[in-house]
Image (cartoon, rainbow, N blue to C red; front, side, top):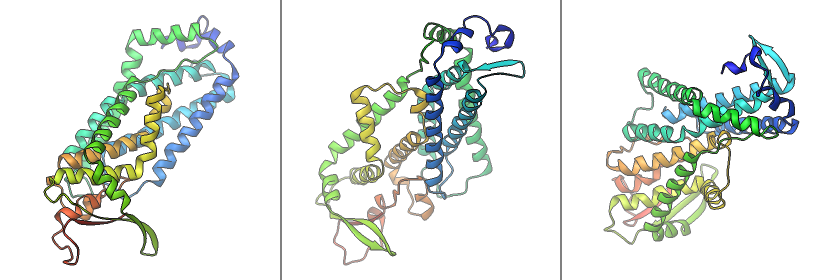
Length: 339
């Protein structure tokens, strides 16, 4: 990074910023403004009383990092050419900072999904909503460690930084940005598993969706699913799979469709745009559903148990199976769900 200091501002770093069009910097500023607004909107509308998790901490850190990038872009865009603490900043750095962020975001999909999946698998059966202080500190430490490791891999690997220099030197009129392969792999894996789950339980899913009714509950309109299962001998985990799938798609169906369109068209979305809070909460709900299905026999029916997901209510997926206080008037196998 020595080439960023004032005494080294001449040379190949100087020319791109001279010829770089005004529209590129303006476009990046507007895109980051929209992304930051969407990030904080999702953090604001989510349920507030949820169990602390690694993914929750990471989403907050991502929103803060996007906000810091937006501030840096806005300041450089406004002043255009200035020096701070011996470092000269020009509009060229708007592209450079965005490229570094894109490269860092692009390599974090696998570790974030892996850590979040392990976290939910180990803690999904916990009934305590107030974690110990050590657990909070551990989540914060893991988040910081992942970000530091990501930036270290990008800034300390010579091949990556040399590629950035070559791209910026030979593309002075553009700002070439990294497209993550990891995000495509994660999307493909999720869509594949969702498709397999739907094929296995498609009859139950269709029957359940056709039974939906709109009723009034506590002076508010709610959806009620009421259907009778014809497969009384069906394994508990396969019946649960149907309800988990309906719960997940009931909230994230538009996002599933969007991911399918992106993969089908082969759209190349820059990594700094693709890694966002809505995307992470989409993955979060998917991982929670997988954890519920894998550890369904360990789930206890307590109110604290259902405060895991900020956007999806998983409560009804388990209540009909283990609820021993069901009214005698209800038919065996009948499920009534209000959400």
